[in-house]
Length: 249
Image 1 (cartoon, rainbow, N blue to C red):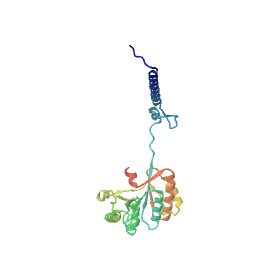
Image 2: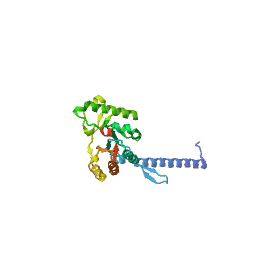
Image 3: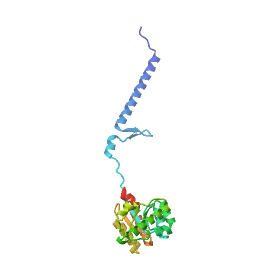
Image 4: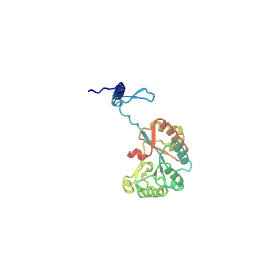
């Protein structure tokens, strides 16, 4: 005989079928929502998800352009002006390159150590600011060696970069001393001007990306002009780096 189902059994079965259908409808809705890029938000509202087509349309983020320049200072350290300059650079989070003479480094080793501790690059500017000539090649070379020894004793680091006074250089020194010469692309002529604003205008008006700016930390107007120029160029989006980042990156 066929089995006779009670009314209660039929009712339970219908409720199970209804739940199954409801669950199936919900899964179907979720699948459709996912296909069209929608999800439920925290408050129950539908929010659109980024689809592959949307990401492709937007495209990848463009890399941020970094416009780098290097600020360099010769002839120091000066017991007063170099300290003022270091204070201003530290306040602005800016690194620079200092080409120091051996005789001034001997007099102010504490300033050399401060330069190193605050992330500046230190280079050789001969012992007595000697200009290389045909007649003094060996004496010039001895000054470079002596200054390297002084700086290495103070910092514990090998000196690689040299700025020859007046730009006079003998390429054979590069192999003999394992040193790399660093010249400049913007000469501020700050040493022959007492007008800080004029020096600042010359820097800001001439500088371009990857320039190496020549200044001196031995004059109060140079320090004033340098910090004003830093403020102006930071506002223009420039990033100050040491010369090695300009030369080799």
